[in-house]
Length: 605
Image (cartoon, rainbow, N blue to C red; front, side, top):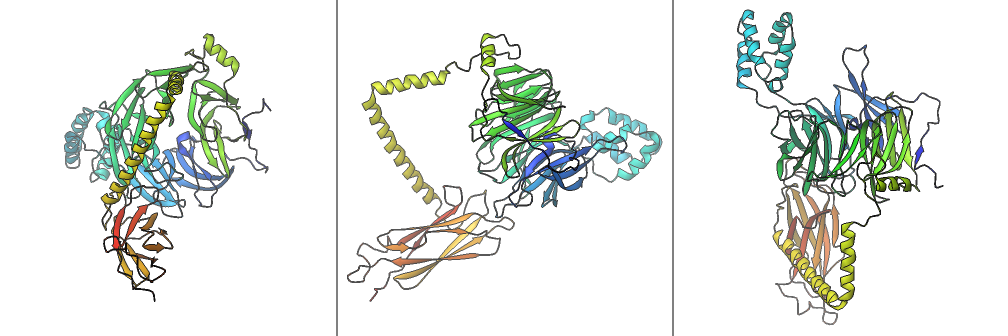
């Protein structure tokens, strides 16, 4: 059992020929597109047949290893992502496909929306040339085209670039056809990924992070299709993004790492819209990752190196690889508490690294072009590989898998004789943080009494701070209309019916937005148990549509003295209150907090 492989190979049972696929890692995604709990694989099959006039692509949906559905795409995609745009139930994923300057959204595998990134202002000289071209004689066109060539090629609009590439016999028809079209420089999307909006739970709403070839980094909110963040890689216009990786949540804080074609790596934050150069290599990168746990940056380069940097740009370690790295993929394994990195090398070898240490590897017959990891079907840990010839290989992680560095490799790294590892350090060396922990534990043993006393003081201070923060949060939300700008505005009104001791409390929730849906709302009631009894203090509300009020009711019973059947003497008009809090699921601060004054209850004779 010690020599058993960590990955189980999946074979097809039928004799039908396996499907072929030509794609990249960025053009593969996993999604529950049918909302039936079965996760399917989506991939863009890129056709590079020489017989066709231009390359084409098809969006294919696989159930396991069987092709179930396909749909032609209007161009060659850059990336494909599956995301959720709201919190309404049942949750339905949306497929985003980035093609040229647009993002195509599919819902239930049907076209849903098309978003085009905004165009940039063109040069004044280019605008002047296009105003003169349709009205001037053809013999004056060469001089105008020569003035267009004086402008930087990257700053020209697409129709100007195409015009300069045409011959004289084609220019007249092209000018007549495009004389009314706007002159704008629109960048193409070169990379796309998802960032979770506010929660790290399963299937939360997400935003799209777009990187364009003009160096702009955009974050698109897919519910209203608005840009909520705009940044730039750097001031250098020649730094064209090629790879992107994101960690964090949009509402709290996030980091965006961007690699450019000239080998530079830049870091953007929520409070920093312009990228800060972390490090720059003299060779292009083939892979880029921002690991979520230790926030280190992993990169693979075309000179066969596997590098790890901190966010400050310090080189932590590097490993020399035997072949060219083709694809880089993170493998989060929460059940094992590990974050591995898979590297597909030229020749078919796939290696798995835990930090700088090689913990597993296997080889295929040919080079792996694309990799995908995650839940597929009913299995949680599935690794899908697409080879150079189009073969799809699926491997499932064993239940009793172990990823540990080999003792021989550790000895080689410690001695410095292994040329594949440039950094020589031992995994058994005690880190500096561990030494600090041991020293602190020894001091606590020597001063146990004073340590325990200071701990109790800090504990009571923490409880006092938490209680004060709770009161402040409730008091700051005392209003009948929610003031949270990140959600749809909601209005709450209350009505009490009855003469006692049994009352009926009616609450009306109204969505004041014109286009957003208020979902995942919870109503919480709180009252003094000495005065009132509430059978149901918590109610989960369905989604509230704009303009359609929702009314819920609660039964409130006043507590009477068992002897004289009268309200207790401690009940006064000042404390005959019931606190009503309208909360959003997953948030600690209520959207609305109000106090309902209860009428005086009659005696129960």
